Amino acid sequence: MVTVQPQACPYPTADRIQAVRKYIKKTWQTLRRTHSHILEAAQDIKVEHTPGRWVVYVPVREDLGQIEKALQAAMPVEEFDQIQLEVLPVRISQVKEHGLLYLPGDYVVPGGRFNEMYGWDSYFIQLGLLRDGEYALAQSLVDQLLYQVKHYGTVLNANRTYFFNRSQPPFLSRMVLEMYGHTRDRDWLQATVAPLRSYYYYWLVPPHFNQETGLSRYYSEGEGPAPEVLYSERDEAGRTHFDRVRDYYRRVPVDDYDVSLFYNRTQDRLTDLFYKGDRSMRESGLDPTNRFGPFSVDIISYAPVCLNVLLYQMELDMAEIDDILGHPSSVSVWRKSAEQRRKLIDQYLWDEASGLYLDYNFGTGQRRPYEFATTFYPLWAGLASPQQAQRLVENLPRFEAAGGIRTSNNVSGSQWDAPFGWAPLQLMAAQGLRRYGYRAEADRIAHRFLALAIGEYDRCGCLLEKYNIEHCTGEVSAEIQFGYSTNEIGFGWTNGVVLELLALLD
Image (cartoon, rainbow, N blue to C red; front, top):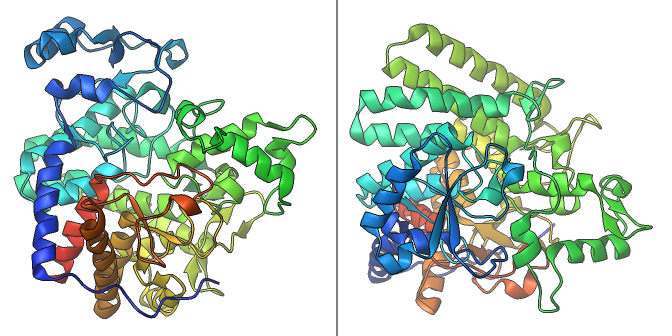
């Protein structure tokens, strides 16, 4: 058990908070991608690029000629000549060179090496844009995700070809309602219903749906090593993430799962199932952690707390949307689905003995006793009973550190485990605690994370992707062995969460 740091970082002064607000306001434009930025967006350091033009793929049902004219009008000739527009093949396996997937409107990228639009990042970015009065950009952000569902089949992990066959945690319905709260545009809201339902059923049919429990799981249908990991996540010795994993399996006994399913020791080779699990772990957005065993490659055997809580929220959101639009019969269907899911979450994911929500393994019929900050998601969604909420609050000291909420209580060398903390999990926990009346606890978490993030802004002049929550620092590279060890600057979702937490404390 990692001990709680008793002393938080000093809370920033009003002048320092104002300086960060100005930084965030400016950074939205730095992170914005428009048609005039298409060359910048197409450039990608995460995969190998042969000399020549950067490929931008256009959906089959779109007019290539019209898109070409629109880009030519928005870009200098010398930049347009550096991109190559192609119609996306019907089968993704026919893509010969990885490239950017075209989006018709403006969007915001996280920052650093993440120079494309990400699925769940966009929710927290949107919250920040709305707080900052950037309504048109917030609207466009949602519209680009809806466009992805329509033309690319789902909300993608991000808009590049190698991210096909996997999504990210589903926040799209929340984003739609957040936007509607500002615009009150019923016609637009009506137009979102079809893509929202399509995205919902992405999670409600196999392979994402588990019939035995009635709950859903993360599952990527892609095969083999994730290209962006194979090329870019190398250490100082030139070893890839997968090289480091093989070395781990050679040296360290593992009893979390049957290692032979994922690693062929005789051939010193990672199996096809390993790569399936690795890609599915990346769909969860928590890449990597040992939450589902080392490197989370057994994730496809689990009903995760986070995904099923978000689907519960989506069912409530769909009921709210249909209620606004005057479709009472649909409202009752969605609410019934949400109530059924709440019961299943209670049955399979609530652990009375520990007072935590834990992930459930279909194969073993057991909850995995791995304490992870997603245990607070049910508070955020309002599905916990008052008694369950009280148990979670009693367990709060197990997660709380000097800089906020610790991701997990296990130091694994992975970036989504202790001692690291990430902005989205701080916000979900703080909002959830506030929802159940635990204001002092929520405000304490908000204070701690804001003190850390703004304190590090004073040191380095930027907001960062992740932090060492124990030691209140953004210097994390030396402690990360698995995943990418860099700490990216920008940073989209940290911007949004800082603004939301400041609003929470007002």
